[in-house]
Image 1: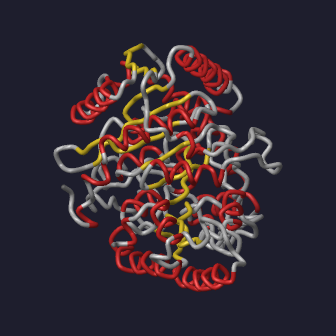
Image 2: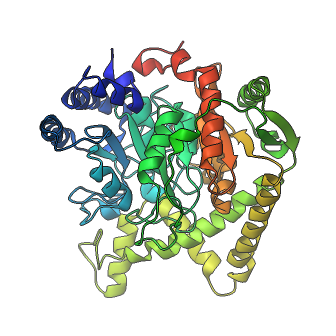
Length: 492
C-alpha cells in the first residue's frame, strides 16, 4: 500500500480501521514533498516540519479521546492567496513577498476546526492572473504528467501538487477557470462552486464579483467532502449565501438515468483540438449508454463571454490592487524623491508584467470617456450571458463542454502572447460571469499521454447535480485506475 496513492476517503477508512496512523500519513507526504518539490516546484512555502509536530499532537489527542473528528490529521495544501495566520501569504508576488497574514481566511479557519494539517502554501500565477502558473514571481510550476508542460493556472500549484502525490487534496480559487483548467491539465478533479456558496473572507481579491474558492482533489467523492467542509454562510462575507449546509456526498448516487444533458455546439467548433473533441464525444456516448438524455443545442455566448470577462475582471483587479501602494503594506521602494515617486516605484518594482497589463487595461475601461463604451457594456452583456444560461437550464439539468480547448501546452509556448493565453479560458469564463457551479474531471488522454478534461456546468446552487453526474462518469471510466503520470509511476 502506497499512502500517497490513496484518496482522502480511503485514508479515513484506513485510519478508522487502525491500518495506518496520522503520523504515517503526514510522514509519507512530507517525504514526497522533500523528494519531488525540486522537480514540480508546486510550493511557495512548505510547512513539513510544522506538519510533523502537529501530527504527533493530533495522534496523542486522538488516542486520549480529546479529538474524534473524521478529518483530524488529514493533510492539505492551500493556494497562496488565502490568508493563513502566522504563515506567509504572498500571492506569488514580490509585492507580498514577506507578508505574514495576521488572521486566517474563513476556509482555513474551517479546516483548522477539523484539525486538518496544512502542508504548505501552493504556487500560483501572481495575484491569480494567468492561465499557466508561469507568472509567479518565485518559480514556474511544472506539470507532473510531463515536466516540460505547464500545469495550467492560476491554481497550477494546487493541481500539480495533487497530481504529483504531494498533497491528498488542495484548495484553489477560480476567477475565470483557475480551478477547472489546471485540474484538466493535470488529470485531477476541480470544482468551482456557485458564487456565494463558499466565503471569500481572507481570500486576497482579484475580481470580487467573480472569485470563488473551491476544491482540487483526486476524485469526485473527495471533492464533495471538501465542499462540505468549506461551504456555508459567513457573516464576514456579505456576498455569502445564507443557504443551510447540506451533505454533498449523499448526492453521489452513481446513476444518471433520465438526466438531461445539453451539449452547446459552439463549444465544439473552431479552435478545439481534435483529440480533445474526440475524447469529449466518447464521453457523451458513455453518458448515453448510462441512460442520460443528450441533446445538442445553441449557446452562443463563448465569443463575447471572453471579452466581457477580461473587461470586468481587469476593472475589478485595477480597483482591488490599488491598496498595494508602498505605504500600508507590501513592497516599498527603498529610494524615492516624493510621495508620487514612492507609489510609482513601489508598484513598478512589486508587480509583474501580467499584473501591470491587467491593471492598465482595467484602469482604461473605468476611465472617464471609456466607462460607458467598455465597462458598462460588459456588465450589460454579463446580464445577457446569465439569461442565456437561465433559458438553457429550463430545459437541461447539466451542460457539458470541454474544460479547455487543448491539453497542457509547453512551458513558454504562450507566455509571450497574452491574447493566445487568454483564449485558453474560452470554455470556462462564462461560468464565472454567470456565477454558476462547474466541475472538471479527467475523461481520457491524448496521443502524447496528456490528460483531457470534461466540464459539467450546473444551475445556481445545483452542486449536487453536477457532482453526481461527475461521480457516475468517474465510476464508469475509472480514469485513476487506468492512467497515471509517468512522473509518479508511468502512464498506461
